[in-house]
Every structure is written in C-alpha cells, then in structure tokens.
Image (cartoon, rainbow, N blue to C red; front, top):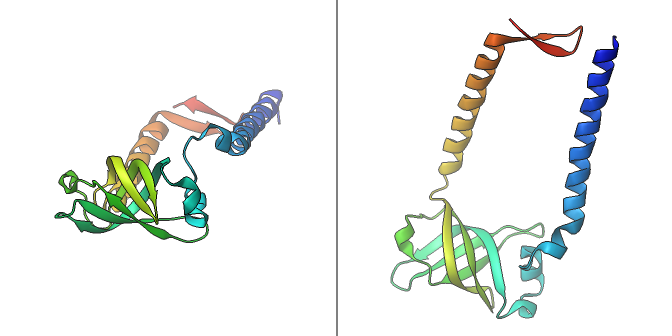
Amino acid sequence: MNRKAIARIVISVLLIGGVLSLGVHYDVQEDSYDPYPDTEDLKVSPEEYIDRQVFVFGTVEELSEEQNTATIRIETDNGPFTADIERFSTQRGVQSGGVVQVYGTFQGEYLIQADNVRVVNPAGSSNIYKYVVSIVAVILIMILFFRYWSLNLQTLGFEVK
C-alpha cells in the first residue's frame, strides 16, 4: 500500500471518530439545552410538569371534530402512553395513524392544551412513500456517480472514467 492510501485511511478514521465523538458530546449535553421535559419524565411523574410547556411527537389514535380534541400515542423507552390534546384543529388533514408534533401547556393527567400542532405525516402510509422515494433517489444518484467515476482499489480513490 502506498502512502496516499495509508493517508486516506487515517484521515477517514479520524473523520469518522470525530463525528462519533460529536454524537457522544451531544448525548451528554442534550438535557442541559432542552427547555422541555422529556417524554420519559412526563410518563413517570406527570404531576411535576403541570402548567409547564411541553413539546411532544405522537401518533393520532382518535379525533373528535365536535370537541376539537385528539388522542395521541406517545412512544417512550418505558412503553407508550396516550395523551389527550385540547384545541386540536381537525382542519389540518391528519387522519388516525398520522404523526403530529404538539407544543402546548401540560395540564396534568396526560392532558395537553395545544398552542401549536404540526402534521409530520398525515397518515400512516406516508412513511412508505418517503422510503420508496428515498430508495429511488439513492439508486439514481449511484448510477449517475458511477457513470462518470470509477473506484481505484490500488490508491483507494475515485478516478474519472
């Protein structure tokens, strides 16, 4: 192996190590910069967070147009729990099975008075569409890339065809 190949391997290992160390740093520091309680904390001790602002993601289980409410399932490491959302506008086009993010005031007993609701996926089938489009895009990009470039295993680099 020549010096260029060794240098490329060393640089690659250093860059990957740097990215991994940034991930560890983020995980250690996350709690000190996040102003909202974690969903784990909401599930374990909800009484501590009454009248505090929360920001949660959840899957819509039930919608009530008459009462302008919804019930969402929030996933945690300790298992899911459901929360009732007041002031949930059903005009947003979300269906049961869709994913929403809710910003609002925690009222206790897993009740959130929503200040803002955003639809992430309008229905459960939205994930399938995203994955299919992503796979097609990756295949097209790889075809275009290897149409003009080839891998040289001697130098561990790419060369123009």
